Image 1 (tube, helix red, strand yellow):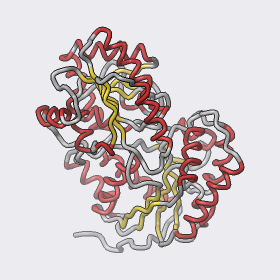
Image 2: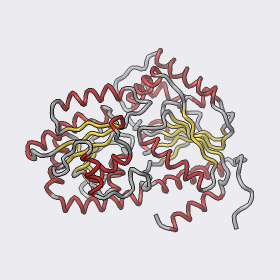
Image 3: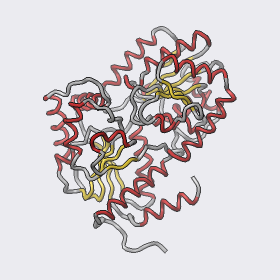
Image 4: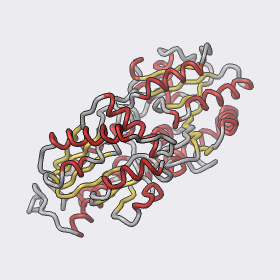
Length: 408
């Protein structure tokens, strides 16, 4: 990232040395939020913050409700019933009762624990921040009306894009896009030979072209549309294969249901490989598929950000992405990838990349540099440090562990 950027981060962090920070979310594995926290919290500690991570607890009924809320906040026509509201608030209350500690900054991630501040009160946290990782620009109005009162008490609400804040834009807010960790097992450099060897273990014929999408099994990621686009490509490139790769998360019980729909839609086509972490596909294997595939797709219909786009771009791959949410922040159309709005466009761009490998390589080089400048974890850390400092200045905090002396 360069010495000057690292020095800037350390300089910002010095005034926050010893500040106690806790991140709270609903799962320790599966999805971009957990991957960010696995990288971000050690970096916060490395620059002198006393940072930690806590998980809320919930039953299947709670996570079914929060998944419905997730879909409704994306705009789905789902009724949030009185029973669902009761379940949501009951589990937030139970988690509030077990929340302990004295923190300078409490960062609550996504809708699942959003009512924690309401249920717990401000004791134990001097400043409370709600971090939203989904696209709430056009939510189901009833779902937003239910959730909104629990967001208002937070000192700051953080979104990937300003448009996601909706009618909360007049309240204190911050815009912080997510990021990738370039040194994680998913993103470290991998040779083509190594990636091919790994893919071959999962039945991929590495001598034939491969299309890949890495995402949860979720209707908003449109894996069914990806299969349809693959079938259009296969009419002109009979040897093409498709890999759909996911991580099944604890807080997404709907994932297994939609996984079965994907498998049924794939049918008896043995060139479609539907894989997930229970098959042994972890971070290294995702790296292999993103590094070794001929075409990477992220055909989302709604998307908070789509961090897998930056992951693939970091590996020098132009990505075909849905023109929604945070994907256009990453893909500059026809410069470092393609933005599409239909199955037919997705297939057309996939055929283009398969037939123009040299141009695809040039676009991939631009994609990697775009990620380096905008979407790596060091920038994410700097954004948090600046936000913490601004909150401290606007209303000075007696940071619990702040050092009163500077280094050297």
